[in-house]
Image (cartoon, rainbow, N blue to C red; front, side, top):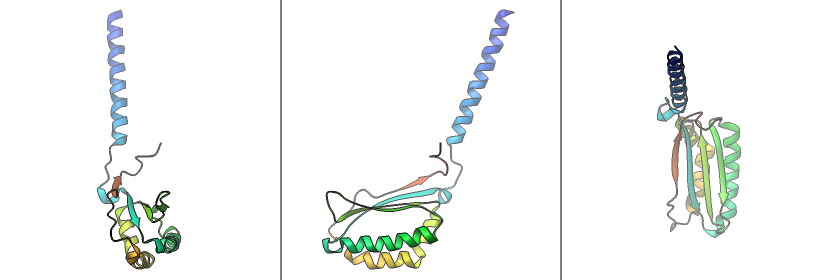
Length: 141
């Protein structure tokens, strides 16, 4: 009788642990399609030395409009290199690819791209740009 009770308790414990592991695993799987995932991007930009201030001014003007008018923007930041004042890192995060696509069609974005196109250092080739697709909620605690 004692062995029977221990056997039943063991089976119940195993079933409980298996159920817990299955529930934990399914919380980390993403059922979203790629177009509805968060999009995180990083770009490097190198400008001609005489245009460093202009790039920052143009970006700040664009960023103010992005944050005020684009609710799909999760992050829009420009960082200047400590070692090379002409090298910048632009990071963007968007709620969806559609939010980013809409951003690319807006006048403030087109203006910023147009006015900074010819200030870039033509000899620079970035090797560290990336795009990540992130399942919504994947990084929440």
